[in-house]
Image (tube, rainbow, N blue to C red; front, top):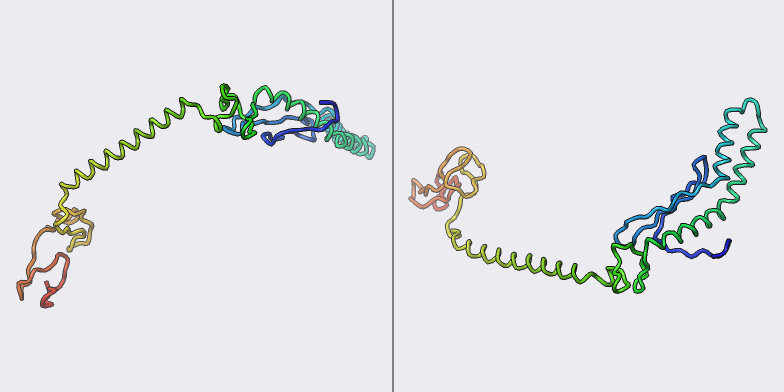
Length: 221
């Protein structure tokens, strides 16, 4: 593309350029729009800004000797560097885009730029638009394995449920100390038996575990 011409670019890059100082220069990160793997363009120094940065350092050291002259030189050099920044950046970006083309492919279906790992070379499309047959088969095979394992586990659980006593009422809290019992026969905290059937001393009616009074006559249990 000719110097100063239009600049066409995608959105898959980040500008890492530095406009001012002795480290001024241009550098761009281009990334895959599928996996985000990144390629960074070679650093291209911006000499005008670097020279201005060095001049500012020198004038700072010699400010006592140069006075206002040093400040004027700083401003002039900085202004010159700023004035040329836009054009220089465009040229650097244009060059970086050309170099990045060797590392990325543009999908004809979704227009994404992807790296070699995310590119289906046989179909000329990205892996999102043309997934690898081998990868899809492997994923489907694993999905079937998981689904069948869940079915078998559920069937085994239903078989095991036949061994569970669902009719017996369990005392889940100890009537003596209030600790959780886990449905056991004795309290794990104080050892109180939890399966004792109590009867009311007054009316001989069965008193439910944990009850302080007989539900039939009201006498203290």
